[in-house]
Amino acid sequence: MTPSALADLVRSSAVTVLEARGLDTGVLPEQVTVERPRNPEHGDYATNVALQVAKKVGMAPRELAEALATELAAADGVDTAEVAGPGFLNLRLAADAQGEIVRRVLGSGDAFGRGDALAGRKINLEFVSANPTGPIHLGGTRWAAVGDALGRVLSAQGAEVTREYYFNDAGAQIDRFVNSLLAAAQGQPAPEDGYAGAYIDDIAAAVLRKEPDALSQPEGERRETFRKIGVGLMFEEIKQSLHDFGTDFDVFFHEDSLHANGAVAQAVGELKESGTLYEADGAWWMRTTDQGDDKDRVVIKSDGDPAYIAGDIAYLRDKVQRGFDLCIYMLGADHHGYIGRLKATAVALGYDPAVVEVLIGQMVNLVSGGKPVKMSKRAGTVVTLEDLVEAVGVDAARYELTRYSVDSGIDIDLDLLRKHTNENPVFYVQYAHARLASLQRNAAELKIELDPEADFSLLTHPREGDLIRTIGEFPSVLSKAAELREPHRVARYLESLASAYHKFYDVARVLPQGDEAPTALTHARLALCEAARQVLANGLSLLGVSAPERM
Image (cartoon, rainbow, N blue to C red; front, side, top):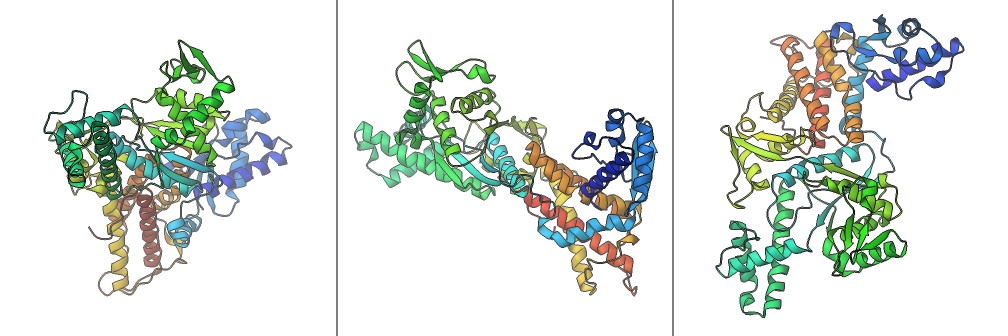
């Protein structure tokens, strides 16, 4: 019996209790909360449903809890139901009912934990979207890990997710990038407002290899050569870095296309005609303050040029026209103002503001030897994705970046992530998986076959029960991670599952030794271990982290 199945049982039992007394069952929540108590002595699970609804139906909470306990104690799979305190209900499941979780995992395999809560939703997930003016820095690297994991989590709940990279190939930053390339190609120092680093020299040299006569071209043609080739080379490098990091996109959307195909002019023109924009000081403005922005924003500047938000308007319009009913933007720590701005854009276009969600990620810092790491070998002024991967590897980098809420800043201890000890979270989880895979190999050598129909009523040790219950939590963890857009919940869950397994392994021998013959308990424990391995593999896959079979 999974936690969700138990929650359904508690609710149906509460309906029976209330109906028998002629009381209103409409007061019951759609989803009854069933949680594991902090103290295992209080039971396997606990619920406060009696406290939630008793006063609404005119009963004392403890009286309702006692009636509910009587009903549940008679249900199949429930061993005991006891009232505690003012009306809490502590439940213990029969061992065979708990064992159903193991059977379900083995039957579902890779699909265990997945749900359909977001079935029918078409989600555009935009993340990273770093300007093509340099390698991806640590903030973008965090989004590459978290965004990819979030896409996997949303898909696992039935959503149709399109991963999109907004390629900022228009605007002043591209001009500064081109100026920097030209300076490097001519052997001059980088402009004061330009970009510096070995990568600029590398790209400038690559442009000249492709177009040896570029510097002798007329100025306008020369700039266009360096812009087109240089930006293209930088973007290809960014895409390759992301691919090597395990993050691939379905769509690379070019900002410049919105201007070139007239989408910006059309969207702004429609808003002018509808009266959504207002004119002041020779410019056209949007009332973004209506959606929480600190000030209204200029859409068309007084010189007639579009401001950056004009592209945002056309871009959101394009997304909705492509059929997306939810557009998630994952932005950096300095983009808080975009929440109100994008909500206001949705309203201006006639959409429900809920079509837009904005996640803001906080800063990432690297620490080694107790000191901050600030300089990149190649980018000079910032630490890049490649620097982090070179230091600790893809798995450790992705896992560490994903295991924290995006609301919090991260100090990544490179020395810790290089350790092959239980102090290193990704090693701790991966080692648990490798240990379990080794166990299955050893069983195969002993010719002990996995039996999904083993007698799980034999799994009565407290550590066995704890491991089973932890395995059973995976679907609800995944559901909550998708609902709250928090893939770090999956990482933290995997650590608790690895801990439950290691504690089980310390007290419960699985395979026979010497001349011993396998017993029914052997088969039950082996199936339990395979269920734990499967869930660890499923969870690591959702984070884009490998599940090694040997370490």
